[in-house]
Length: 98
Image 1 (cartoon, rainbow, N blue to C red):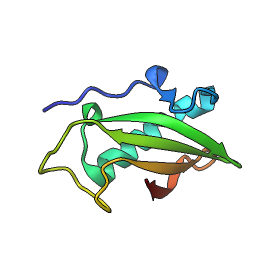
Image 2 (cartoon, rainbow, N blue to C red):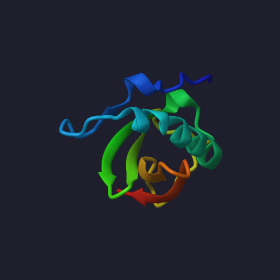
Image 3 (cartoon, rainbow, N blue to C red):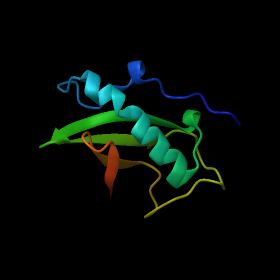
């Protein structure tokens, strides 16, 4: 199954009070690369949303959308998670499960 990439212009926040900046949108590719490298998910398997800004970091929610797949890598019985991205280094610094 070929996935459809999540386009930065379509990324929203899961909190309507948070406004996406241009810098936030540029970090979407960092999150997409991370998800591809750590989970092996196709772009159409998940949705990325900004969760919030924490000090000088940006936290994104990654929501797994493709149901139950045997090829899905699962951590802590959760397919959805959050990543903390450092905008200066353009690296994911940590994951959070919810």
